[in-house]
Amino acid sequence: MTGTELEGRTAVVTGGGRGIGRNIALGLAAEGANVVLAARSEDEITNVADVVRERGGEAIAVSADVTATEDVGTLFERARESFGQVDLLVNNAGTAAHGNTWELSDEEWTRVIDVNLNGTFRCTREALNGGMLERGEGTIVNVGSLTGKIGFAGTSAYGASKHGIQGLTNTLAKELKDSDVRVHTVCPGQVRTEMTDDIAEIDRLEPDDVTDIVVFLATRPARAYIPEVVVVPPDTIPVV
Ligand code: NAD
Image (tube, rainbow, N blue to C red; front, side):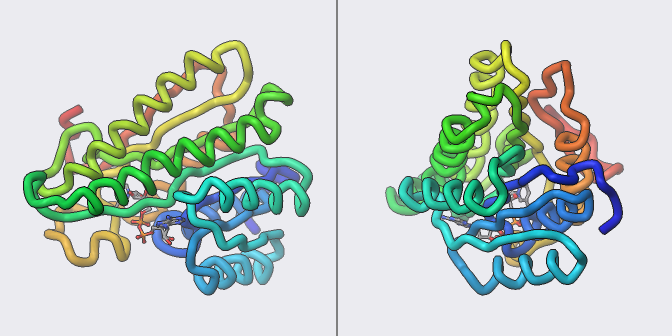
């Protein structure tokens, strides 16, 4: 444990078993947050929950597929049973399909939209209806991508899903403007994780670079609306 800024707060992190999600979960736990880890693979999230506990924090692992509305309901129920309420949601679960747009099957397109965009919608709706709206406060951080802003050849379903997340975020900001519920999208450039193992390497970020921004947004609830934060390596000129 390193800080106490999120002591007593509870964070749900989807896709929290590896890569960026794992890093975000450990970063939030290091600030004192109780962490609820969700992913389809139970082994990965159980392992991260063990690491949080070894470091003196509180965590539970809930096997959940963000494409299944019932799983998402169970995830938030388990979070509330264990920790009372959910203060922070990080919509990080994501997947990609590679190939030119005209080569993608219906299944590939739909799978990516369903995990990345529809999954973000399902979890967000559950977090809002499950307490944030009633309390009038909470923080939701969506993990978007630079690809959703500027495009990247061979990733159209992915880019469209991430662009959609920005549309969702901007709409929620207007719907929630009279409350203290904040919704943000963090748009990283390429990050060194399993997701990028098999694609051409460009100047890469580390998961820590994304976690730093998520922790910042979670620990300093802004009065002003911060719709999105673009995170790229220092030498990259973002074309946004
Ligand atoms: P990753 O493949 O290592 O991790 C993805 C996580 O999402 C895994 O834990 C996986 O189990 C989970 N997941 C996938 N489908 C799921 C589902 N249906 N239900 C629940 N969980 C599911 O990838 P990563 O690089 O750590 O990416 C994490 C997030 O960051 C994604 O949203 C990704 O789009 C985004 N992102 C990644 C990069 C990058 O370069 N790696 C750049 C920008 C944004």
